[in-house]
Length: 354
Ligand SMILES: Nc1ncnc2c1ncn2[C@@H]1O[C@H](COP(=O)(O)O)[C@@H](OP(=O)(O)O)[C@H]1O
Ligand SMILES: [Mg+2]
Ligand SMILES: [Mg+2]
Ligand SMILES: [Mg+2]
Image (cartoon, rainbow, N blue to C red; front, side, top):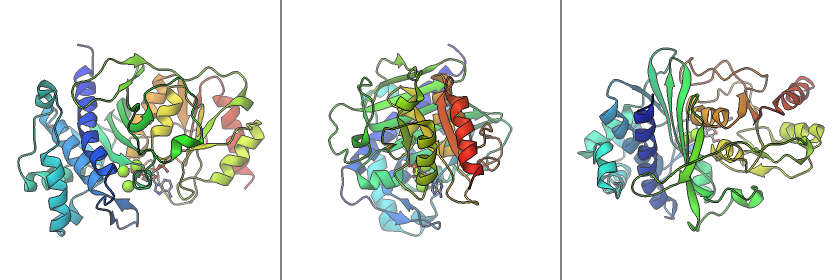
């Protein structure tokens, strides 16, 4: 077995199992949404997926730390919400019994579920093995019926080493370039659901999601691009998460004529890694906001292994060793190696002229 193959296998199966749960919630009208202290939304899907994934990690790697986005505080004071989540969690398992066994089987009780969710409370850091978990990335997209991703990465001594992104609403077929329709109204499951993975130094792959064991994978790589004016660039749907105006100015300076493709979540990283789009721009909207490690860890290693470069808006490598946030970075730029220098230069020009 090659290095990290067990970690990769567990991470892929854990994400795949969690997506069985998130898809059930996605297709329901009432998603059990509560508002967090920063006014952002969280749903029963986020809590349930975090419980299932942490349970699988703790079963296989009891010593590892976990930085998970959610905690169980709201559930300890809200019995109705807690019971709704438990109903989903206790009934979610992989259809392949060997795969389910690998993950340690079901969580034993509602109390164990709450404690498991709270195991995502690591403060992160530069030493040892730390998993970064975003149980639903793009919660606003999830609520809107758009793209979302279940994201898991292993950080070893501050370096992202394994990354897995489950994207239930991306098309299995990677032949088509993405367009504006990818961002919205994904209510039909037909031909959708992709699991992306990478191990540092070993390349990136994709495979169709399943509800049992892992399906065969294929290598992925970014699209070769010589003429930057033909590039497709991706950005968030939410104007509150990245600066649409700065991104439009950068695209214009680069001579990009195509409309940007707006989609929620790390599905943007996945889409450029498989060559369905070319660039991902995430310019900061606020001086004070610090990007969260779970919003980027998996995407960064997948894009890197697919032949891309990911830095912050000033060309600095993203530093995952500083805790739960990327406190020394601002914004994100992701692009194929060949055109990255051209883009980085224009990003700095646009930011400096403000
Ligand atoms: N002001 C801000 N700037 C950048 N990112 C923000 C932000 N406020 C929230 N976010 C993050 O943006 C993520 C979604 O990114 P995107 O816009 O690419 O879909 C959210 O993840 P969650 O949905 O997991 O909470 C959240 O962590
Ligand atoms: Mg959130
Ligand atoms: Mg997120
Ligand atoms: Mg999230």
